[in-house]
Image (cartoon, rainbow, N blue to C red; front, top):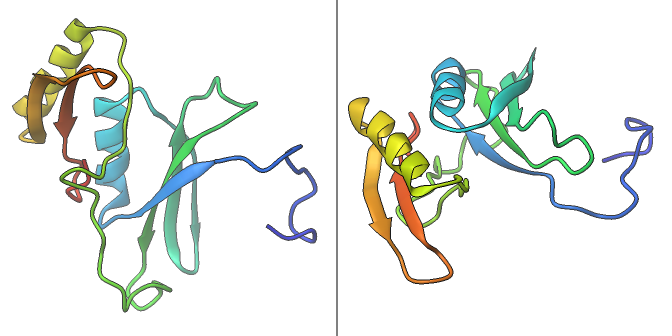
Length: 139
């Protein structure tokens, strides 16, 4: 963040986002808006490629976003780095309201082949969980 670019600053440092490099931004947006409670909040294109911000539209005061970027050929500033994928344990965690919601999410993921771990009861404090893989293999 630079003073020249941004006129509004948070009152204190805060955690704002997780960013993922993706292969197909349209497929990624479609997957996250179908499989999670996240909505597409913003999308842009520049000389490097495409970016999208997914999150909860009602979290303006303290947003936490998933930022996804698809870089154009030859424009990826991290092109020499391996394309990191979250998984099998590293993951994006989204809390659902009930066991039924988790089972429904798992059924949706199973139907399109993205279920990575079926609903499983884990010990406290974790609880009842499942995992799905996005189009790039992130869980």
